[in-house]
Structures are given as structure tokens and as C-alpha cells.
Length: 270
Image (tube, rainbow, N blue to C red; front, top):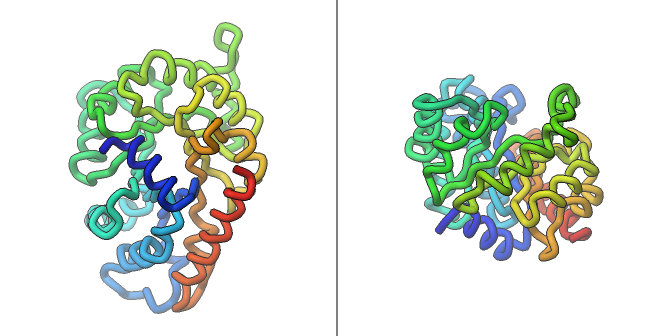
């Protein structure tokens, strides 16, 4: 099953457009995790187990694992998701961007080592920085387009032949690069007008939308701007608001509660 097929099936099964981001910061873990050798895995696996029936995808952020020398725990976590919750896609949030043989190795890292179903990629070096990922035809390749950070406007709003740079990226992705139907785009919830513009350009292509929850993106505006005619096509990501909803031994139950509330808020506007 391809990434896009997995995503559509998981969204339908769980009635969800919610993606839970797994950004583990041990300094924010409940006290009873302190001193555990496998604390990052244990924490994230508990979040996964508490929310798996509420989501359409999980998105571990590789830097949070690598900075703690926890890459082996990331491998174990992705294997846990695939084994316990087959059909829920895993997006490795890596934002890789390079060319040639280096890009080929990054693709191998995401898809062969970590067994991710999709990976985020920075396309601003052009097509040859994306091509090695596209060779994995059953995997998802989610390109940065209009990012949620304020500084994204420094470059993404530059005029390139009568359109903004982020619009050019969206157009290239949809028209020229998406040969296997595997590409998605990252468009921040903090910019609903740009979500609508990207949707206009790319049709039903999946959009990964970070920025709700801790970053302050508006759920109604996001869903209204980005939904497709079939009321899907969105992966609305929330990380910190769900992960750190609880501060004690009931943290997983608190995460489930916030995830359920977020899914319900999203579905209210579908």
C-alpha cells in the first residue's frame, strides 16, 4: 500500500485529519521518566498507544531524537507503530535538502533505516534535490512550501516571474514533479490565505499543516481554507499541545483528551 493510500484509509477509519507530532523533550517529561534509559521511547510509545485511534498519521521529528543520541529509540518507536497500528502512516519530519548521492543517502536513511512511510524535504535546491526521494514510488515526499514560521516570508514571498516563490514550488510539485502521485506539501496553519492559494494550485494533493495548538493557528480557518471537495486532503499537525497536556503519571490520558478535542474541533468544520 502506498503512503497516499495509507493516509486516505487511516483518515477514513479514524474519522480524523489529525497528525500527532512526536517531538520528545526529556526536560518536559513527567518526573517519573527521569533516569530511564529508554525514556524517550517509553514516553512516545505511551502517547502513540493513547492516541492511535484518533489520528491519521504520526510525525516524529528526527532532531529531538538525534540530539539525545536516541536514534535507536526512534527506530524502535516507528517499528512499534507499524506493528501495533498497521495502516497508520509515519512521517519522518527531517526537512532534508541536498543533491545527488547525499540526497540518495538521506532517502535511504528515512525509508530503509527508519522505515518511515513519508519524509519531509526542503525543495529549495530544486528538482534534483527531490528526485532521489521520488525514486521510492510507494513512499510519501512532503515538500516545504509555505512554512509556519514568520521568517518564511523572507524568501517564500519573493516574486518569481509574476508569482510568489511558494506558489512556484506548489505549481512545480503538482505539475512537473509528482510523477508517482506521492508528493504532499507543508503549508502553515498560521497563514490560512496561503493554504487556500496552495489548494487552488495543487487540487487534491495532501497538505501537511503545522501550526495549530502551541503556535496559535486557527482550526476553523485552516480547515475552511485547506479542505478538498471530499472534505479531506489535510494532515493537521499538533505536537506540544498534545504531548505535554499532562504533567504527572496521567500524562497519556491527558494527551488523549486533548487529541480527541482537537480531532472533534477539526471535524466540526469539515
